[in-house]
Length: 438
Image (cartoon, rainbow, N blue to C red; front, side, top):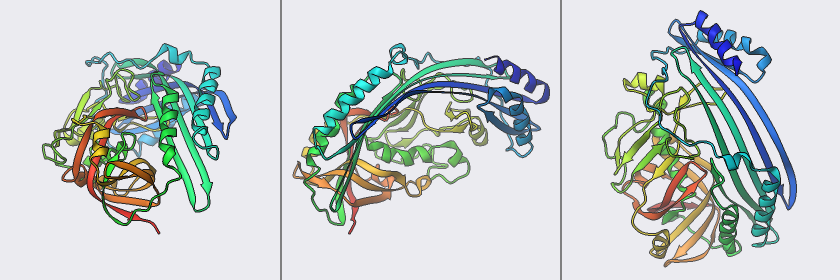
């Protein structure tokens, strides 16, 4: 990584301050579809980016061609002429950095052959639920190495691993298109892939028993895997960039009660083996455990250096970046504190509701305003505490702070990790308006 020293030395002579990011990764990927192995291979990438500060303005450029790294500095300098004002200092590397585990040796040594084997077994488990299903399995293991250095004195290297596993099913029949999935991800291979497949297969036993729902109000039970749909508008609203430009519904509301008193949400980049864990953020600021909402009260926004400067505060260590993009604020590992009753008990107490297992298309709507709209792709109808069939072709919409405020009925005591970066219990929202299609 001599390229880092070379770029930083050149930048020191021509800029007020600068930073250089080097990144490389090795990704092993395996995919199956319809019982056939479609891909099994390794992809390597590397690149370097430079951020420079000239006359109080910032410019950024990057490349994956290490033979032309000198051009990166020239491009960043050119961009700085038209860049945003940057009234903040870069970290000097002397902060209080936590010891955070981001690398797992066993995951790094995981072979493609093992990934193929577990993919085949998972496909067989799900295929056993319905021979007409088209089953796809994706398995990926990544080893990443980064080095971040700047003219203030920071120079830190980070090594990390990641393991992703997903099972997707599709089936097209007359007047019914079925699409459902389950997945998990981690820094380490610390979960049972076949348990993920069995969980998916178990939910599919209701696939052929379709029940109608009518437009109106019902209780929605969000499975832990779907609670992130509710959290996305929240993390969008506490994003420092949206607070600075006043587009967030939570701008200027620190200390206000914005949700039910039973709800607490924490962002924690210091969690060992957390999918978004790390001792430093994308700018080199030390990370920390940050209460976002505590017992319903808004406690913190998530900021990087630029947004913190605009707000007159210190960065919370939430700068996120890719090689091709400069830092922007974003959430890391999001944790919802559990309640006091099991998810099974919450389902048993439901008179008329829907257990939401999978929404399609992600969260939509005016997210910065807290407005949420989603299509329910796979869900189960609950009547008097019992599952009676599968629900299809309906959507819900509303304000997430109403859903997590006055209409938050319950939070389960049992939590589950979802997508590697969320740890959440089941959440029950009462009297949610459902719109049935057709």
